[in-house]
Amino acid sequence: MSGSSTSPEESNTLWHGRFDSGPDEALLAFTVSLPFDKRLGPWDVRASMAHVNGLQAVGVLTEAESVAIVSALDQVGRELAEQSLVFVDTDEDVHTAIERRVTELEPTAGGKLHTGRSRNDQVTTAFRLWVKEALIEVAVLVEQLQLTLLRRIDEVGDAYLPGYTHLQRAQPVPLGHHLAAHAWALDRDVDRLLDCIARLDVSPLGAGALAGSSLPLNPEVAAGELGFASTFANSMDTTSDRDYVAETLFCLSLLGVHLSRMGEELVLWASQEFGFVSLDDRYATGSSMMPQKKNPDIAELIRGKAGRLIGNATGFLATLKGLPLSYNRDLQEDKEPLFDSVDQIRLGLIALGGMIETITFKTDAMASAADDPLTLATDLAEILVRGGLPFREAHAVVGALVRESLSTGKSLGDLAVAHGDFGPDISTLFEPGVALSRRASPGGAGFATLAPQLERLRQSMASLSERRRAFHPGESRQ
Ligand code: ARG
Image (cartoon, rainbow, N blue to C red):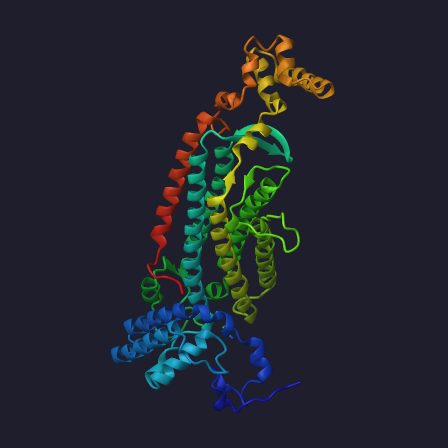
């Protein structure tokens, strides 16, 4: 079924010269990207200004023409910021809308804006700028979450809890060491986000539709003005390259997976069964029916959003799969998943940060769970190892004591004292926190090793944030 269409001249499309009729309404309804790519508007304005300056630098535009177009672009930029730019039906995307408006404001010079440029290089230039800024912002939010964790680590001092493997109590660990484990995963996330920025920091402007131009373009001029680190080497590659979108979606998915792991732990820890934390009222919800409930919805949603982030990444890879060179309209599908993943991760980082900032750690409950003598079985075996016994044999000796403890109900500590081979002072090992004072292997979960570990973390964070600041183009995203 076809709807109404207009004559080619009335249609206002960028391609009306070649066509006998304007586009069918159904075509526009399906192909339009304006509702979601409006966000690229400010970046398109900047990139268009740089393009115009580039054209003037090589003599394709006169100074008067370039001044006229840049001032029209400046006005469009203001209209976008004030949300006063009036869009029309044939504004297929924000790039079309900006050029149309510039031409309305400057009918003669405006018609030269698109010289030596295609939307194919134009769109991906604006999108790279947007993504670069967004990744910088996400990196800052991740750093802030790391700082929140560090503050809480300092505050909890020598608190300890059971460390788990297979969700079974394994060995006691300092709470600070446990929280720092999450901060280290976030450190790799920041590192990855910055790597991603470094690879996308290439200007595609000047690649045209796919083949460059017969005009004497100099892509370096616009690239320099836009703060890109370099320019493209191959026009076909750069107009079809969406690696940066796929990589960003992956980096945000993995970050989302790390946040979901924290979310899951908070859900468990807030349960009556664990009872390791209590949530601040501002970061918990109640039940509409059960008056006694206090639910960790934020932590659950953080866990749940990871599924959506992974979906955005895999969905977009499926879009890319099998596309021939170079630009294909499928590539327009790059924006919604990326905007969505960035929006969700930003909200998630802020919510989780607030939750961790305000949570109460019930360190008594943690300690009494960790004081379960069975969690010291490994340390006990290592005492025999210090005396020269091969670890396998020590494991079997302690294993037998564990079995006896479980079948008789006698504590492992008493059995170790009675055994005789562990030395006269063995009962001290079972005093609260002693095992953690004795554990000193580098990077291990001991009280003494926590400070140097945190020092190393702070150094890593400082060098990453220095790397991040070197990228900053100095303009904020809208
Ligand atoms: N809005 C489109 C996009 O984001 C513009 C591309 C138009 N190019 C074309 N050859 N039709 O990809």
